[in-house]
Amino acid sequence: MHRVDWTAMDRKLVLPLLFMSALVSLTFHTELRAEAPLRIGVFDIDATPPVGSPLAYDIMERREASLRLKGVVLLGKQQPIVLVAVDWIGISGSGHTRFRETVARAVGTSAQRVAVHCLHQHDAPQFDPDAEALLADVGLSGKVHDVAWSRQILEKAAEAARAAVERAEAVTHVGLGQAKVEQVASNRRILGPDGKVQHVRWTATKDPVVRDFPEGVIDPWLKSISFYNGDKRLAVLTYYATHPQSYYRTRTAHPDFPGMAREQRQQESGVVHIHFNGAGGNIGAGKYNDGSPENRPVLAGRMAAGMADALSATKERIAVSADDLDWAVVSVLLPPAEHLDETALAETLNNKDAAEPQRIAAATDLAFLRSCQAGEKIEVTCLSLGQLRVLHMPGELFVEYQLNAAQLRPDLFVSMAAYGDYAPGYIGTEIAYTQGGYETSPRASRVAPSVEQVLMHAVRTLLKN
Image 1: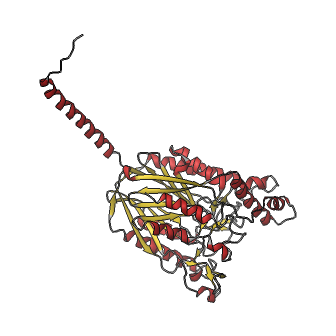
Image 2: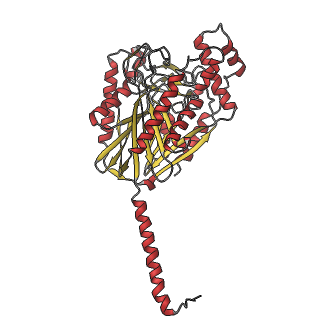
Image 3: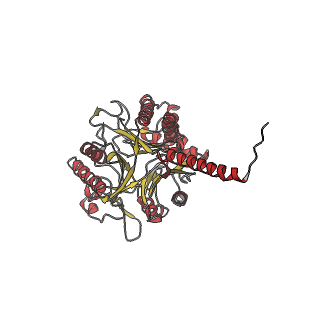
């Protein structure tokens, strides 16, 4: 066997060659990483149930407008991230988990990296398999949602997400902008001199005295996130906190004024526009809406103007790559409200003489209570992309959560989507549960006042980096 003799001359020649080889290898791999950009795929499908299906409060008798299910798939160095917004009133419990799992399988990611949110329109369906199963046991199957159609729409969403991956395009820049929406949002809870709720200003308020109270605590800013490949705009995401109702119980599905505004902007721009409802649990259009049908397009026009202004306010586009994309998860166990009595709820559910809406409400409450008893957690997540942070939250969250999140990181562009897992119902601040009012009543909220501590700890954790 020939033995190599490393002489001083050999080392002078070989070591530089080895160094140059390593440098070439390092440069080659660095270039490979640079050539793997962030990519985005978009999808947009019809999510309108068939005539005869349950809507939130009525049976659908006719089709007037299209409910949409829209989303983006973000492809970086780790598993894909999927963001979905759908024109339904809510998706609850195991239904929320099942929806995310179905989409996750289609794109090759985990359910933890899929965020699904509703816009909370009231002339729209809901999806709550846990309550549906309890009702089926007492002969009331199909009262919450159209079971067969719901399965079909989940598979349709999964296929749309899969196709979006296949046609994904490179993202070179992200635009961040915000603008105030004028004369839409107002706080629903009007406090009296004693600090208690004196009036609930519903989303449609006919009483001019109640309408004339100040707007109260709102987040006036609509935030816009736009994705670009060079000069080509690929998708626009917007976030704004308010209940979306102008009027409802029309027995026809309708996306209401936020959906109308979103579709107007999509038609004007030719780019898929996806809108998320922020923490709008205690926010509605009641100060500016008397419930007249003529006012719906007025509110839609104001929302569309805010969307356009926020996009125009995008001063510069920020260069991004796959290295900038990140995702974080905090799993939380929400504290159930003390008023949730398992024995009493089961008795109502099984009482054939009770009114059907009461039995349905009992099934919904019981499903959430049992999930808490089983230790089932809800995932709060955060998308990071450069200086952008998007928080994904459960329930009908009060606007204070959104405002506090933005104050925690004024150095970042913080957006929030609420109405994720709908099972908790309204989620107030701790003090709100001492003030009375509809939103924190046993009828509306299934969580205890300590929920604020749980969720704000999750928010602080997610916004640390």
